[in-house]
Amino acid sequence: MSIMRTLPPTAAPISPTDLMYGFYGIANGKLNEKLEREIKEYFGANHAFLVSSGKAALFLILSGLKRLTRKRKVIIPAYTCFSVPSAIRMAGLDIVLCDIRPETLDFDFSQLRDLVDDDTMCVIPTHLFGIPSDVSKVRGLCNNREIFVIEDAAQAMGAASGGKKLGTLGDVAFFSLGRGKNITCGSGGIIITSSGEIADSIQESYSDLEKVPFTEYALNVLETIFLMIFLRPTLFWLPKRLPFLKIGETRFHRTFPVLKFTGFQAGLLHDWRNKLETLNRGRSDNAYGYIERFEFSNGMQIHANGIPYNRFPIYLEGKASKEELCESGNRMGISPMYPFPIHKIQEIKEMFDRRDFEGAETISDTLVTLPTHVLVNEKDKMMIREAVKKFLRQEERNEHTFRQGVGCH
Image (cartoon, rainbow, N blue to C red):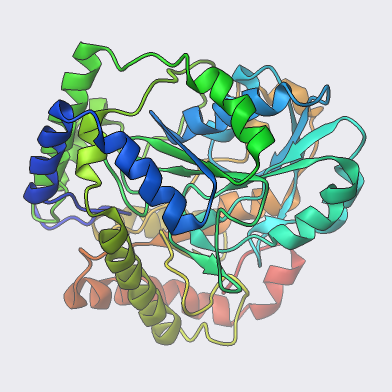
């Protein structure tokens, strides 16, 4: 990669002022409690928990729900972050996959209806890219069967549906504060719920969490400083070259640490509400620009105004087009998402009896994402448009193909 302007696929910049508050948080042990109170107020939730990562948050939720029921099945989308099945397996639960529809990036509800049974502990609808999942429809399938609904709002913090904030529609929800999420403190996760029963059960594990070891704490601080500097498009070419930072990497972890939130992380989020709303407005505005430029207004459900897309999804004609655009548009932040569906993860693929998930396969083969973050300037948008439009023109000649299983806009 040459040394030139390079956009990250997704970003939530950290300022020098944020960093100063981060160091203040190391010495002030009360910032975590303050942050928990602010989160409960913002979401109108009765309980909030702060932990070391989004997958740690999901693991704690699942561990808490295990104490409340003997059921053991967890239904998730067949195309989602690998951290989700990682947390389920580490919690000792069974993964059940439901296909998703490319035009909604939500469950295939006819299939979900058949999958829900008497051993289903919970269903995890995912607000992928910040696009709202139909949680009310999920709840309709679960409420009378004592099945919990966990919202995966890792990419949707601050987004809303029907006037209600995502994360408040199910029984319990989690957000990620990792690099590139809607707002970040380098890493971290949030759990919210208004259920006293669920909160009490989560608290049993939460109370016993260990602190981040000193060496790891110091490395997290250094990494945050490094990314604060090098996230800028004039310098981002460097971290993309450094494999230890694992930029854009998606992995299945058999085990992972579940630790307390640090004072440094809490300090970095000193002004998180204002910052989140500012960053999300920028994402919504940039997404609106893509919708207008590419004439998506009357297109698929996933292309709607007002959504603070963490990344903006488009479909190409096939896998070859996807790979070509991602290679040529790499410096413009044009990128794929997850490398393959959940049923193809090497460590767990034997669990799924060679089942096919056509929607997830189509998404994996044809989905490309465009950057929406506030570091994207007008010149970047013009370059992205030029890079993308020739592939979309090919799509316009094949509009019928999406409904036959191949993605198009």
